[in-house]
Length: 212
Image (cartoon, rainbow, N blue to C red; front, side, top):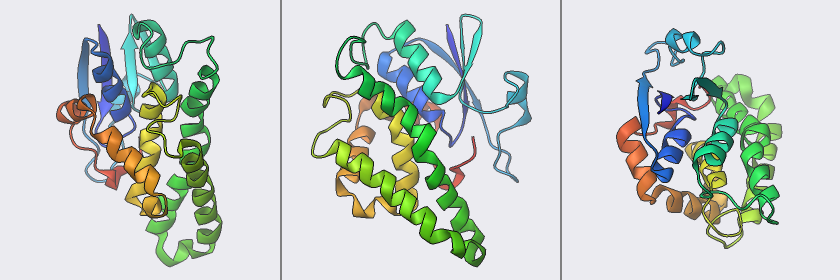
């Protein structure tokens, strides 16, 4: 059986949602954040040296990193669901969004969150970071257009991976100028499996964004 080590208010909500979408049997171990630092507890280091979440145990292997976990689960357990066929034109687009979410999009968003916490001390960084956030959100908005989903207009695991990017963007008010992205996020939230994941893992409070 799969075993998910889930840190509340974190990227691991995506993996919980993925498991619910696929209807897989899994064990859920939930970890609270440190009430003083808001960081992950030290117990996670006993499972993986980085002490981060999500972590997924699958047949004796410990998998880390959201994109890698999603890729592995879909390939090994998806039975053709939540991804295009590997020989299709859409597959490379799917892989792009799996990697883009954390490889490119999250950095300026997280920097923007930290900049806001710095107050006046972060003011010199604001123009550059705000420009990069707008650049990335504009790119995602243009790629989505008026379609419902990012890959061939079919819901896929790439939408799950990209959801956290938009959660953080919305928490900072950055989605205000991209109505199609706001509607897209609401569409993702309306999925029954997303709602089940919230029931099992707890509500996603973006006050903890940026810490895994």
